Each structure stands twice: as structure tokens, then as C-alpha cells.
Picture (tube, rainbow, N blue to C red):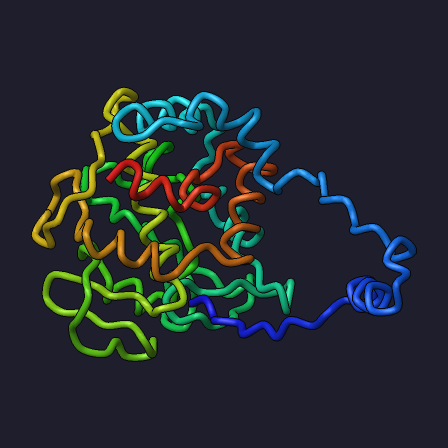
Length: 273
């Protein structure tokens, strides 16, 4: 979650000299104010190129434009996902490890598999919601696949997302009940933006189901996941951090060559939904 920083303004040396010059009658000798920076904002190149057909739009027009943009992607197989996650979710403090989504633990990259204590491939948009399984496409889209502790992944299962429930064993800060799962605060926004990416990317025009979020937690095998109102709140409360932004860049540069637009532009969540 973001932290509030309290800034204590201090007068710069040039400003102090200017004040002194006024007091001594030598204002003309005061240093000229610095020219405003002309450096481009970090997203400007993307908005001028990658997102150029989406900028300025809202609602269904924005969603449609983003769908067209992000559908232009390279696809990987389910077996290739293992190696991809070792890059996308690398522990910045230990390049031999990955960070698990729900526990936040740093685990050796080599400790992947299906046994207790290992990490496996979690489909954040549960693969049964739309019955796409592990098919190349939504089943292998690493924008919503993350390393997860095997047991915690099993606990989450195919539940929708919502607040509340009982504490999840071995994953402090996560909660679950019979029909929903609440991730820890540090990744609530990540989860929301992954779900909303999937809803924009997969619109039913490529032989897969039209995936859409709704405000239910009883979606079963329908191509829906909720609770949308809660996901929107999570996205606002937990804005993209450096880990999530780096992950988006790695996927774009090295693997799928498409981006999660809600990491680059979190305000587009409200603009569409």
C-alpha cells in the first residue's frame, strides 16, 4: 500500500539570495529562476505510440480501443510459463528467487512444482470461469499468472474476490470463506488490475469466452468474476508499485509484447467501469 510522505519545504539557496538582494537594493543581481523542466513524462512515449488510439476516450469506446491494442500479442505455452514467471516475478533483492503473490514470500526459482512447500502457477482469473483451462491464450497469459504457494493456491481455488472470511493458514493477511478470497493488502490492486486486464483482452472474438467482471461471488463456471465494486476499490487503494510496473515492462519487452493498461493508467478503471 502507498505510504504518505510529509514534506518539509526549505527555501532554496537562489531564493534566499534573491530575498537578500531585494533587502540590500541589488535585486537586479539576483539569480534568474530556473527554466521549467521540458523532460517528457514517463508515459508520454507510450501514450504517443502504444496507447495513441485510446487516449482521450472513455466507457465502451475506451474498452474497445484497449482491446484492439492489447490483443496484438505473442503467445507462450503453459510449459513456457514456468520460465516466464521466473523473470516477471523475480525477487529484486535476490535474483535466484521469485516472490509469491499471496504469501509475499521469496522462494527459490528452482522450487517450483506441485508439492507442498513449492510454488506453482496461479491463474488469478480462475481458469474454470469461462472454461479456458490451460489453453494457449487466456490459460497461458502471464498478465494474470503469478507464482503462488501450492497450498494457498489450492485454498483460493476458483473463488471470486471479495472482502472478509477467516485467515488463510500460512498466508498472513489473506482471508477466505465459502465463496470468496481476499488477498493481502500489498497485492489487492495487483489482483484487481489483472482481472480487469483479462476482461478487456478476452472479448469472445478469438474462440474463447467473453470474460467480464460482475458484482457477484457465485459465478461458478460462468465467464465472470466478482466482486467488481470491491476490485475497483482495491485498485484505488493499492496503486501500482515498482514491482508491478517492472513486471508489466518485462512481459511487454521479453514475452507477450502487450501491456496491462491499468498498470500504466489506473484511472482507466473508473473510466470504463
